[in-house]
Image (cartoon, rainbow, N blue to C red):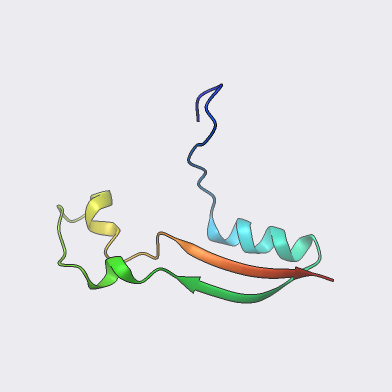
Length: 67
């Protein structure tokens, strides 16, 4: 992100995201990956981000409840 921008890209390790919720007292009720890229024809050079996106759940939805 650049200073003054309204939106940006935040990347966190999955274990930090879920672990952080658990440490704060949340109960994780649901986790889902967006599988659309997993079904597209594989493109990009092996080892590139374009190639890796075909094997990773890039967008992950988490539903958590604070108790």
